[in-house]
Length: 160
Image (tube, rainbow, N blue to C red; front, top):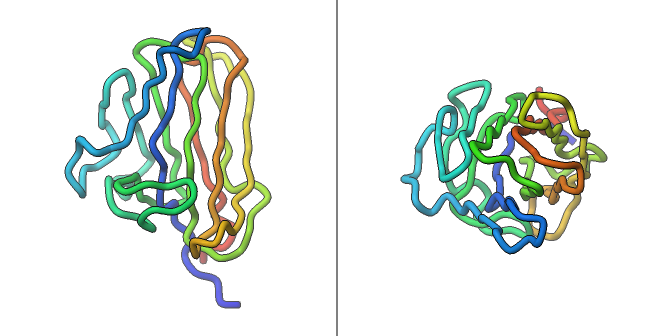
């Protein structure tokens, strides 16, 4: 099989919870942003987004899949997506898809930090074929205390 450039082709509605009772669930769907919006420096509600290159934008990605809805973040899998929370959250989850057909044991990895920048843990999820063409997965972090920020990376093994 010929390797194709692996891209992060979608980040689903980002779900964050700010209360222990999980009653304050905020879902970011990216509907409020025009296609082509650059992710680095973008602010939606409580979240400031960063990306290690200008390659990540709001786009259509793979369209709707098991874990991804249109619109979504699309960008280079070599990049790092950062989330900074103005008000710490207790839970964080996101769906992702990679533009490859090869399953990955480490599809996406997220390290979460407390508001002072100390690591609270690393959470990884595989990317598998759910019948929508590309491999995808759902990564979540919670039960570790107040999350002030997160660093998210994606498997770029199949990239040239």
